[in-house]
Length: 237
Image (cartoon, rainbow, N blue to C red; front, side, top):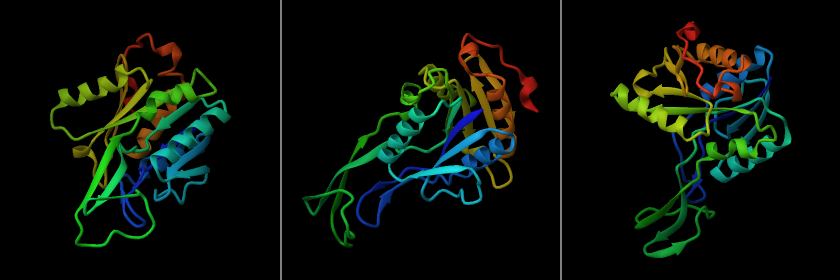
């Protein structure tokens, strides 16, 4: 099985030292890539330049910005016949389009540092949803796409609604859901969903890796399963 894993967060430059970024460390993607490789998969880990992936002994490539991640995905998906792409990367929803300093336009990402004491205005534009294009860019049209949904909502009904909205887009065959309230230093609770419902629950990154590998290896979430395979709690452990 050949699996492409993305991990870590994109960064959008403001000046030579400042960037808009998120808090993703890439740690979960690193665990999945390592464990998939141990279980016999051929893995490439496409990770953010600052992600914590040093100990993962698989083929790797890196990105910084949204544009670099998009270009790398296009290239890698078009070069090989992947069985699955596991898209964990925390992709910026916005990118900097222009900067004004004291009312004067400045080039974004310019060298040097914007000094203190100035009135700075950043204009942001929404980025595209990369997950919507992964299958289009893939040399293998039957590739299984795994998306991730992080929520921060105490209402289980609203959490499920967000998962369903991602599945209903038709871009992801499987969705892994986490809620911030259930992520601690000791535990990393997750659920794996398909269109027909929840397939599995896990409590650690390692359990998630094993369950996800099992689902991918048995074809869950692929073209044959899109018709609505019944959810099975047997995959819980």
